[in-house]
Image (tube, rainbow, N blue to C red; front, side, top):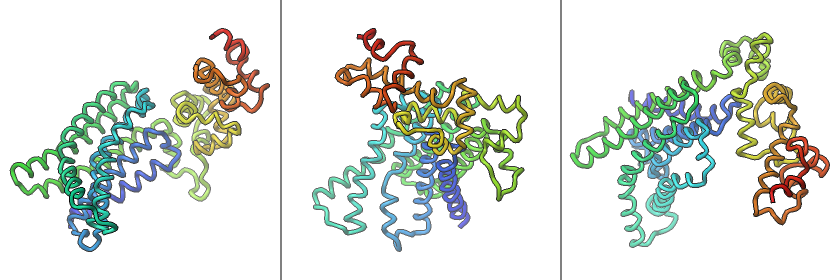
Length: 381
């Protein structure tokens, strides 16, 4: 009973924490997105254990669909994705890392397909095919035996690319907790298989460790580390120094609490909103939207349009329009140098990169490079 209470609390906290990380503009980044997904996966793993303890499968067999999928395949992948995005390693943009999802997709498809017959009775699988699927299912654990140590070593190799010592310590601590949990889980199953011991109690202890992992993620990763960049604004929110029925945006709180000198310190390239803006431009190429303006960007960042201008002006010493146009110019330059676009006109390249007219395109290109687009192409033939 005590175990169940702890687990239910952990599941609830995990789901709430994941939702907060995904929805709050304070945590908006690709790295945190994958951290939230990892917390969701861990919460599902704990939920499956609770369902088994209270024997809910007898009354609600459809929950077998959730239980039979090997969530242990996807959890370490999300942790890996979190790490490479947090340290900004170039591999985060590689399509090859999609192969890491294959074990989970294989497990999900085969088990859900099997349960459509065995649990839901939507259709009947031929006996030969069912036996084949069952045989494949028996290999799941052996795949995990190889996959988990590989992911542990592979993920650890990218932590060293962090340029911030505090960040490196936090990621290393998270990595240690994750793989201490996962490798202990594998060891318990091996003991159960080869020595026929009842490890159900051990599994409950490991589930308690998983709840500890969620708490650590909440405290160290979110409240202690992630919000450090917005310390003044967060303190104001935590201590409710403004009326709860008249909340203003975080950046406004920061500016109200800070004198001019300390406020300027917030406008650096490490500002989380500016880093998110860079990410939107570099990874999502939002500059290709010809109707892009401060208001649209502000909505995506969860801040005011005025603060977007302040950030860009203070950090780049240029205005918002020029900042976005510089990305467009770089996109055109890449297209000019790419043989796949040799049949494109310069204007077509400019329009595809987000410019709205020939005049704007030429003026921005010349301002950025010192030459016209035609001169640039002729010089690089």
